[in-house]
Image (cartoon, rainbow, N blue to C red; front, top):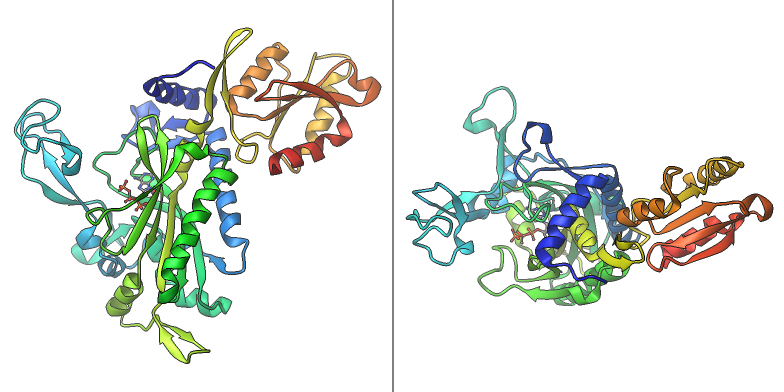
Length: 438
Ligand code: ATP
């Protein structure tokens, strides 16, 4: 395998994403817009696979319910949550070149790291996007695009608990868009201003919080490793020190991944205590306590939060999968995606465009389509067709050849080992099922 330098890996990945239809720059024909991206056919397939896997892991259990709250909420929500006051980054401007920096990202607070110019004092910049509700753009009509999905869950805590007759401990899961006017977006889709979060808030008795916090830490790192197939050695925990903890958190761990640009957070697991529910009770004047039938008392639960970005997970999966290997024709690029997340599960090829091969191949394709996302290709040499699938991470290719019409078999070619075997057409479906579930 040839070794790729980290900086080359990122630029190769960006170019592959565009070339193959994973990710495009938003509004590209107008010159693009900074840090906004569009997901192409393969990108959206990968994204949907990630969301489905997360959703099933979280909600296919009796103690977690799902919701889908609105993006625009009552503006008081963001006062109660602390976002209006605290969701800020300290911002510094260069008086000479006018560039902006996050204070915590620059070492010498006096001189611009770009041009050496004089810097302004730091001032707090709120990361929430503002908008207006209704036709009048005044202070009374200000609303915010949510900077996290969590608050939509907290304000619905009793609605969900009551309607689903849940008891502590139980959780509420949600996938949805969040918006942050980040000062320093970057590293491709790692940090953007619009992104999707997959958040689960687990409501517990206060005395259970430490135990459930440990439980969710383990569950979440296992998910990245065993369900998404990320390399365990590229994953680690990072505990927040006192100066990193958010205003609401008692304890927080990040799951970090080793990206080409260093170890960075992929997911946060937080013990948010009873902060959020207490704040909402104070600001809304509504009682959000849980009534414990057994103890005959009202309890304000503690909340253990797990929060992960969809696009960041997608980038992590691509970085983890991107491989360049020497082979007999020079070099091949392979996305070694777990079959579970791969956009296409299989490709079907007729070896040549005659002798009934395309018809048999189409029949196999039609048969599999009801269950799997399948690619069909009959153009170019078989070797090139394999390479094209390697680059987009399709784990299996089935080729219909001269033998097929005689014995009802096809070759199955494995993306990672490049091994080819013959199997019966009638076994294809079951083989795919088994390999995806591994
Ligand atoms: P940071 O300190 O890096 O700005 P954060 O600690 O505020 O991030 P959280 O609020 O814990 O991040 O967000 C939870 C998850 O949401 C992150 O782990 C990440 O996967 C995702 N996320 C947060 N901000 C962004 C962003 N700007 N772009 C893409 N994903 C994001």
